[in-house]
Image 1: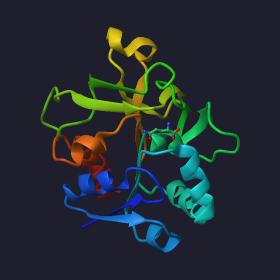
Image 2: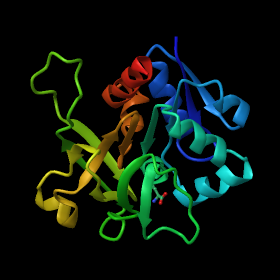
Image 3: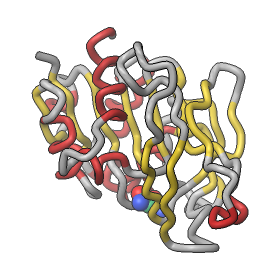
Image 4: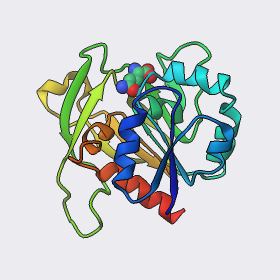
Length: 212
Ligand code: GLN
């Protein structure tokens, strides 16, 4: 069984651990470099990206994490975790660190200026276990979420906010991406997966971990 860690410095660690436990992997919190060294994949949870950035330094995890990500460790970031995976952050805090695992620019709190939280059903590419021509839409919960402003050539766009009036200026924005072994969503699939409602994003990530 692969060992999948959840970066446990801050944020909704518990929900990701519960979501992973549904996927037949060993799920573990990661706070120390020794723990990071033992995982085959790592989730960066939702929470507050500037706080996580600071704690990564305090816990001396920033460099070890950058090294493992550069070496191809499968990583999945939700919301604040997406921000950590980006190349560049707009509306970030001065000196906020990112891992640069995905060639994208994200805008922090992009939805937050309009509404604090927003839900929508998304078409999400690559969900479903292969057979389904058209997988069921994915319920997405956005909480002071970022969106993706722009992506480089190597980035695969997996989902956008639907063009519905309730989405306002977020309509059509990119909110899920993948580049190599790195996956990111602006929303929180862990909230639905933790209580057994829809674990497909974690399933997708675990598939990458198994293949790597
Ligand atoms: N706004 C938060 C940040 O900047 C992210 C919010 C979330 O993870 N739900 O990190």
